[in-house]
Image (cartoon, rainbow, N blue to C red; front, side, top):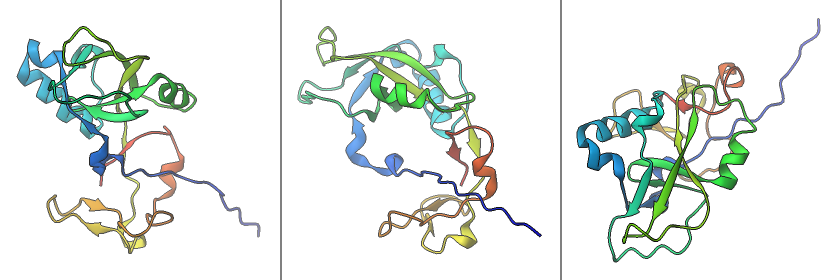
Length: 178
């Protein structure tokens, strides 16, 4: 009998809990319809696919006191994930499925001075349920979330989460349901 093993790596990220990546921007879709903007933000953060018109086209630094000279390649602005042109080029090499990139223009607080470079809203449109909690002893249940929400260990960077084989099938970028 022959057995085959798959030597594969799945990368998980903690960007969703990294407060250093939250930048104070105001999105233009809030000016048009605040309720629809909040709904889009919540759905996008759950990985629900949404049409392009639900995402902001422009974002402005929220306060005159926030002086951002350089932005990271991925960050949260106005409740949405934003990526640089360079980051977008890397993402486009993978199977994204319903996840899309929507151009967004970024401006300083004066709403006229643009940031250098091109930016995109990263619109997650895929979810999977691949996390295996019983095989991930260092992961813990999040006390502030529902009983089926987990968080990775803060003390371990590599090999701290177990995922089932489904993680190797289908799209390459997704929001984990747990």
